[in-house]
Image (cartoon, rainbow, N blue to C red):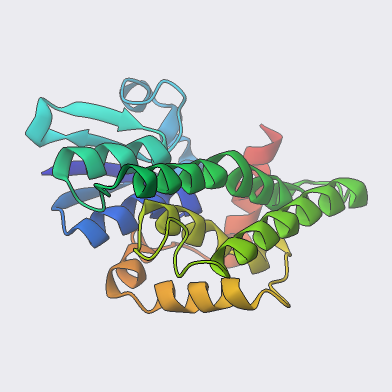
Length: 221
C-alpha cells in the first residue's frame, strides 16, 4: 500500500493520475494547504521543502519520495508500470517530463500568481508569464504534430505531467487557440478513465472565491 499526501493542484494530480493509471493501491491523505499542514513537523520529516505531493511506500520500508516528477519515476521503476524498455523512448519520456517540471509548471505557476492571486495587478509580470506559457504550449503543439504522444506512439508519464498542467490553461489566462495538435492530445487524454479519476482526487473543497482568497493569503506570507 502507498500512502499519498496531496492536495487539489496540478502537481498533486500528477501523483493521483499516475497511481490511477498504474492501478496501484493507495491511501489518500488530503493535506490542507490553507491550514499550512504542509509546514508541520510531521510533514517536513517526509519532505523538508514542505510541498505536496509526497508518497510513503509501505511496501518498501516506508520509503518517502517527494517532488512530483521524482514520485512518478519512482513508481514507474519500482512497479514497472509506464516504464518504457526502449532506451530512446525512455529518454524522450524523461526529456518531456523535465520540460514540464522546468518550464510548463513554473511558468504557469507564476502566471497563476500574478494573474489570479497577487494583491497588485502587475501587467508586465502577467504578460511575461502568460506569453512564456503560450510559447511552451507552441513547443508542445509542434511536437504533437510529429507523434501521437510526447515520447512517441505510447502514452507515458510525460503526457500525464504536461496534461495535468495544460488542462488548467484558462486559470492561467492562456489560450489554446490555433494549437490544434495540442487540443487533439488534450481531448485524447481527457477521455482516459484513469485520468478522469485522478483529477478528482482529492476533491476541491469550498467556494471558488474563498479558495482564491486563501491562495492570495498564502502568496503574501
